[in-house]
Length: 74
Image (cartoon, rainbow, N blue to C red; front, side, top):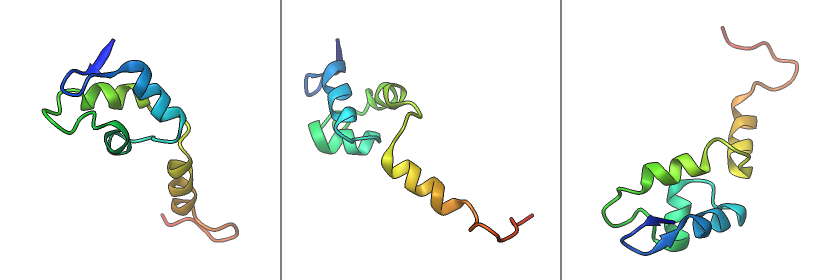
């Protein structure tokens, strides 16, 4: 099934790019241009990516947590 009809990008292509490490719509766009023309597919791409494991997201989450041994801000 086509996700991006402007550039003929299929659902499988988005999944393949995600498996290769693209974990945001912007990274998918960089990989295959999906979402860079009319933008109607961006929400579909976001839904496909969901909130699954993403190496960059894990790094960001670690930076947000307080250092061990320090009290959390109230």
